[in-house]
Image 1 (cartoon, rainbow, N blue to C red):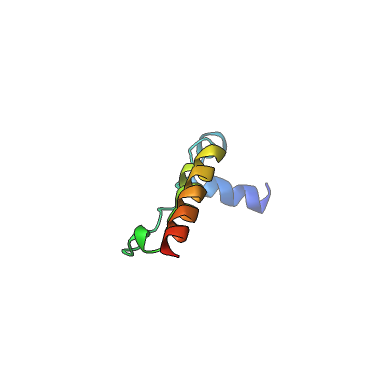
Image 2 (cartoon, one colour):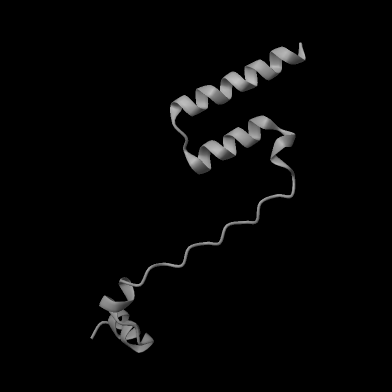
Length: 73
């Protein structure tokens, strides 16, 4: 008997049953305490990555950012 196979049998694991058990996912890090409104660009990036909005929704957001920037001028 192969040494690797023997060590596998000694662990008590079952090849077929243990491979069907889903892996434990890493827990997400708690969000930072910094408010998202502090930087609208960071808020947009995080929302885009998390929610994957439609292109039309992103265009509307860009229009809002442009209008806000023009109002500041």
